[in-house]
Amino acid sequence: MILPIEPYGSPVLREPTEPVEALTPEIEALIADMIETMHNASGVGLAAPQVGRSERLFIVDLSPMAEDMRDDEGRLPTFALGPLVFINPQLVEADEGTLCDFEEGCLSIPDLRESVSRPDRIRMTYRDETFAEREIEARGYLARVLQHEYDHLEGVLFIDHLSALRRRLLQRRLRSIARGEAEADYPLAPARSTAA
Ligand code: ZN
Image 1 (spheres, rainbow, N blue to C red):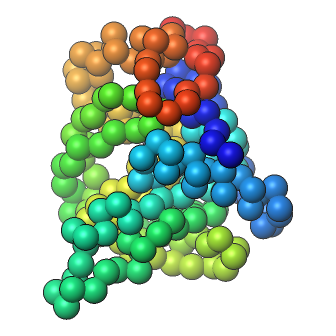
Image 2 (image 1 turned 180 degrees about the vertical axis):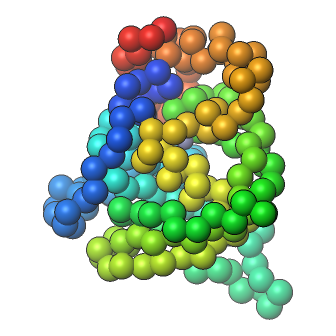
Image 3 (image 1 turned 30 degrees about the vertical axis):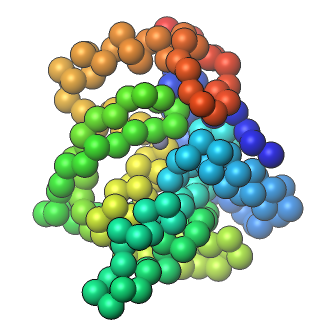
């Protein structure tokens, strides 16, 4: 089932998330719906708060860019083969010595892309779609997407990483999204902002 995506201004995007206690049928259904919702919106990542939920989980799918990720022997990395599920993730290491800039967007903030500085190498622990404990060391584009989605679970949006000046310049656009004036080629939830 395709779920409506919460737009910027929705309070749920700023609320803390709750750890998932067990892999129940409800959680499995949520994950399946989130994957369908992300694919429908041509996104590479989606976090539970973006569909109005408080579970500490997100999904990513880098398979649309898999061809750019072949290694020297022409093999595709396993993470690029299909959707990955991250339940109760913890960012255990982010190498601040590897900061780099890259343009980001967000399904909750339609038609806005900005360059964001983040560490290029990270390490994250999490549980996968079978609830097995895992650890991943990521760099490059995968590290970037993981940090963007992880931020969502902490109530943080990519625009929070921009300079105060840059955010001021974007304020009019952000207010219009919060008022429900954004258009996207995927379903958006009604604006629920109290601050707009
Ligand atoms: Zn996002």
